[in-house]
Image (tube, rainbow, N blue to C red; front, side, top):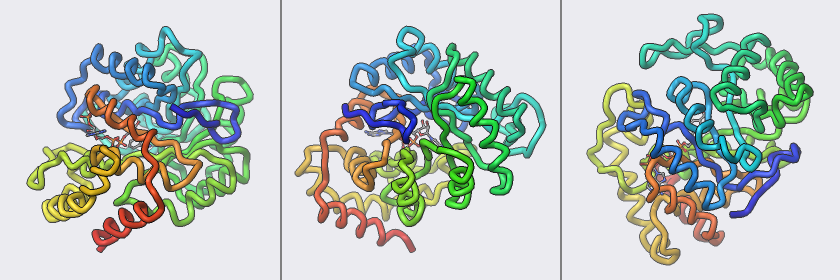
Amino acid sequence: MKTMQIGKSGVIASEISIGTFAMSGGTAWSDTKNDLDASVRLLHEAFDLGVTFFDTAPVYGTGRGEEILGRAIADRRDKVVIGTKCSLNWRTDAGRLEYTRDGKSVYRCFSPESIRADLEDSLRRLGTDYIDVYITHRQPEVEDVPQVMDTLLSLKKEGKIRAIGISNATVAHLEAYLSCGQVDLAQEQLSLLGRSRLDEFVPLCEKNDITFQTYRALEEGALTGKIPADFVPPKGDVRANLRWFQPDMLPRIAAMLDRFQPLREKYGCSQAVLACAWVRAQSPCINLLVGARRLETLRDTLTVSQIHLLPDELAFLTNCARELDD
Ligand SMILES: NC(=O)c1ccc[n+]([C@@H]2O[C@H](COP(=O)([O-])OP(=O)(O)OC[C@H]3O[C@@H](n4cnc5c(N)ncnc54)[C@H](OP(=O)(O)O)[C@@H]3O)[C@@H](O)[C@H]2O)c1
């Protein structure tokens, strides 16, 4: 597995990273069994296959995701890169109510005290005294970015975090952060079906040496080819709100994936890997963040590092996906 520098931070990480959202339990991902030992085994397998970059967040399983990762990295802390996040918490009711799930109300708060408390909670759950990449999970008003950045820069100076990242941000947010200091990573959605970040956001990252860490490359499974065309997400499942999981879209996606069969045969890869290979090829600044709970899917996904699609193949995949834009 190749490695890359995260932004200009000096942090070196595998160019494919693994996230802990789906394995963290809770009703957000409805069929998760939340088996700690199995999750730790999966993260260790990823490490054995060359993955050194692991992404989590306080809200994944409301603390559970960080605890799982903390357990998995306890005997190898200095060999892994941890990305975790701040700004969403269920500690107090300060800030804006974001959502209530599994009996917990989650608030979005950016005060210096709240970000520092987020960090201390994460350090405790992860069993470490520093975070490699500290990411604002959601964003404040653009005019409040300087105050947030001030806190993050202080934490960096204190040695508690090594690099600053942002997530779910607009171009205006990114520009506001950059006017205050170095941002090393932006974690945003990118997939064959969700390409809007390629217009302005990715070029801005390239220009400023920012690692663009992509999530939802598989659109919560819709691009794996394994979701039946008549699948209906259970109530409360995050997939219920995604356009691709609406009853009219799944059959159209299935028809599109059928057209990819010759490429899957050429590369001897699964549909999921083909979709991930398209994402990775979009820019050299991309770090591909994927999720898995089962060892077979993990092993399969990681074979993407060996697949390099040709320009005309990338164009073909993009053009097929464009037909679903309307
Ligand atoms: N910043 C944010 O707001 C944000 C939002 C979403 C996600 N994230 C991060 O990104 C990480 C990845 O999330 P994601 O949404 O991008 O998940 P994902 O990689 O799209 O995976 C989601 C689903 O695809 C399945 N899958 C993965 N590889 C597969 C393969 N090779 N073949 C068949 N199925 C496969 C998984 O199966 P199994 O689980 O059954 O193995 C899982 O059900 C999360 O864990 C989280 O760390 C961040």
